[in-house]
Length: 509
Image (cartoon, rainbow, N blue to C red; front, top):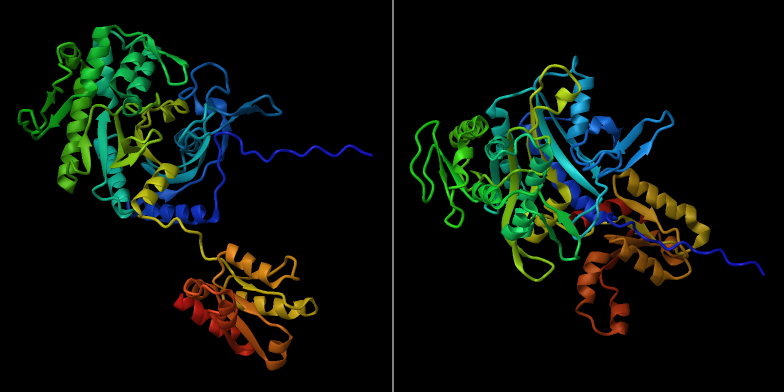
């Protein structure tokens, strides 16, 4: 007796997910809405491949010198390292630099696709996820940054999330100026650690971030994350900045009125600005506030109030390549987390200015700005708010096979329906059991099945079973014999009228 072949366990790799027809259809509906807004702003689509040379992606995400740290990499037969893209921005920079002579400048494009992170998966953290980006390359003024923020707001409004979001805006130069004033500006590693710590403020809270700014912290699993090793005074200055408000050309609660081009830092009562004051005089800090002031003037002129777009110093974004304004879309409605606690839904996308990224490929400076929407998170938000359908799409009309000897006739019906633009299929499974054929159509979410037995064929008719009406009628029938006698939702039509009657039925459904 031969040994049985060992079966492979059907397991989905950690950090990845399958998508059902209903999810695919609903995400497609959401993406079409976003595309309409992008195109209304004058952006055009472009597509870049999943793989790029690792050197083209840069060392913005990985923390070490290994080519596969943070990204999935392989070595080609010419010994060149290639990596799956970890975002859609670095590939755009390569595409623009490679096609510099032929592309219009500024270059306005949008892209949609999967990105990959070689990280430890967890709740809501995937190794493969979809992003939807828009970028302007070749425009250096605050107008391009402000336009991104306004387009983000318009996308949220178009998706039915008006009143449930805010676009929060800051500037990396503000934080860079503070780091420089604290004596940390020349230490790139510590600066990046500070950025990543602040970026976790919503998730870890003040004490969690304080730990990451200092010696480090242990998470709930006991794993230790090394901190930025700041002193207490330095950490307090950073926390004071991210908890303050910047009033620009206006008045905010607790602050003085500001005239044109001026700004006022309004401290949080729990985080005094004493340790921060010297750092606020740096050139970088002043430049950052001036750029925010220019953006605020544009928001005011276009009618985007602080209920939709607001200045917020706590926004830093985790990637290293941002050089100026940074922004995030935060959904403000409450949800229940895995611990049963009410929390704000949080960020579904963001971006900023990255003036140095394209310049890695070319000698001349090339300014650029853009933002990215996290498609999966935004889709989950729309499901929670009821702004998008999450039901399975309508399936095909199913022609049942009552007599194997007349398969050609059933195929003819399917062909007629398809030529009329109607989704249709002939049942291809085991045809001996009528009930199993109908059960199959139910699982396919079919709107109707077509039945032609020998008696119907002799009379030149077919039976149409309206599965939608049948389910509704059957819910009121409790007796099985009564259900069989009533045959709810079933009616007969002349064979030559089949296509017209199915069209009529589908329009009524």
